[in-house]
Length: 423
Image 1 (cartoon, rainbow, N blue to C red):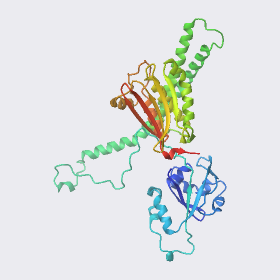
Image 2 (image 1 turned 180 degrees about the vertical axis):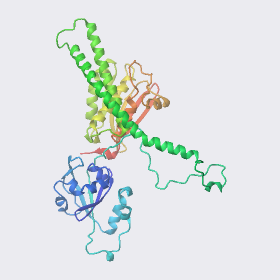
Image 3 (image 1 turned 90 degrees about the vertical axis):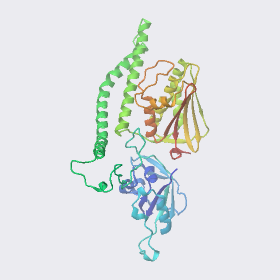
Image 4 (image 1 turned 120 degrees about the vertical axis):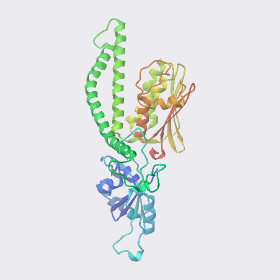
């Protein structure tokens, strides 16, 4: 895991890296420092921390996250001289600190008697950073501070490259750039409007949907007496399933809209992956049995827990399992496994289904695009895989999909080593 590093001057926390800030739920080092440093994260104050001897692991100390959630953390205090402090600062991401702090320390003869050496502080707790915005596309690499100059158009004379254009003679590329920038600026606003509209519509639709689902359940269980004709019971089952499908579709649309608008709420905590998967498998066993598909699990011993949102992880697993069952013919298998590969936890849903070509995978990963290769006719919206990919990105994991036509498909959710906790 990345080391959570901070530097103390006396009892004041002056510098921390991103890992230290994330460990206590802060979005950036500056936010933690501005909140009060040690006073913000240690409810009993820093005295208990500073009372321990240097270079020894301090027993667990009660701490608070930014949202005032309690956790326990162990620290190590390391005395620093000027050179050691400079070396430690260079371990901190340069974007986390003031560049002036990386200037070499003045000679000891130039320091005043009041300037005490700093103290290195390392915390072993780690909590993923809050997710303010989650998008389908990966986060782009930050642009350099001074963008490179644009080369003159091909064929232009050297003297013309420095000519000042007239007011109405602006290059077409600039117009396109301005248009692109305006469009990019309007995109978040448009996504927010779309989310607001969907939220209002979903509220109006949910009320009758819940009534339909609830009354259909009453009829299916014949709570007020027998229905009579068995065909009516079949119709009630159809109504119930259709209501659940419509509610699921509504939830998927809302989730994708929240992700695109950057308003997707996550609650990170430690999660036992095997426990989540077993619950999902148990809920889908009846569906697997009806379609004559073997659904089973296989987990390595002593798997670490992961840092994730348990509700969203469950949603990811259910999406992958239902998709695998849907595209696997009778007599096939769906196997969920959990292993450690290269220090990362790999959660895999493998099926012996119809499989996909590379072009099929690219098509299926687009929202509202649905393949028609399922062995059984089932309705769908084409949101399953794109939403699963977006949810996986949101919980700071990676999504990989491999497939071969006629052989099967493997969908992997990979938790990097910094998301793993071993007891």
